[in-house]
Length: 289
Ligand code: PMP
Image 1 (cartoon, rainbow, N blue to C red):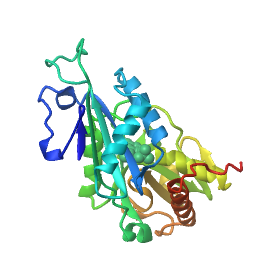
Image 2: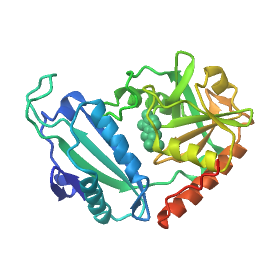
Image 3: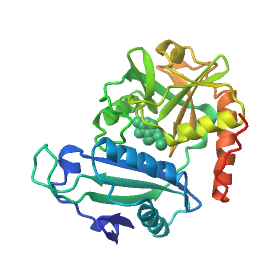
Image 4: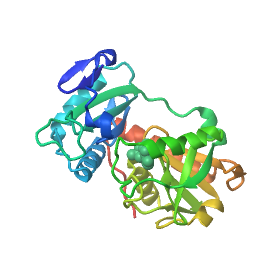
């Protein structure tokens, strides 16, 4: 069951006019929210980022937080899996094709759910391969825009090279992955690039940094150079659907000793524990720093 502009229906019945600005211009934003045991994970944070993205494209939020929550609850209830991946999408609506914003138009709101598939065991045990490429995206990567053509092309480069992700480099520094955030372990310190206009402020990225702070894992938020990426002891990939994964090959070469590292193992365990705490209703990290 999906939601489209006020109605719930099977996805096969959903129709969008061809003049929707999402279709014509990619003029819209989206969110992907993981659901564990029918509870949305970090919902407030996802809805806050949605507001940031809407502000970034100057589109009024069509729903208050309570309304979004209610719509999402109905979609969760209307779909089979206990663990789901919610996809929520807002475009500037349907109007005669013209780059300028239409005067009066209602946004298109679409929500769907897919079963949340946890990464295969093999990825956790042996890690995944990644390649590097120049980050050729626009300068508002903090906006979760539906116009994902650069990300699509960058991700496909990885697939064509039998890898899972493309790590993006801009002006000698690492930004993120084509569809993930990237952490680097160097001299036993977890390094994360600072949140700015060059990367998506990942919800999983925040959880990982909060866990690192709570458990006193040495970490630094600062620019990470290409050289540090290439000589990393560990590379970690995070996203709402992939959670946390070890990258064990980069551009065909082993990362560190070529096996998932100690920091990955620790953060993976902490993440799973934290998820269970959240599902049981306690959403607080014990901040000990
Ligand atoms: N960066 C990009 C470009 C992404 O598309 C994503 C999400 N797929 C992320 C980072 C990770 O963000 P989150 O942890 O909120 O899923």
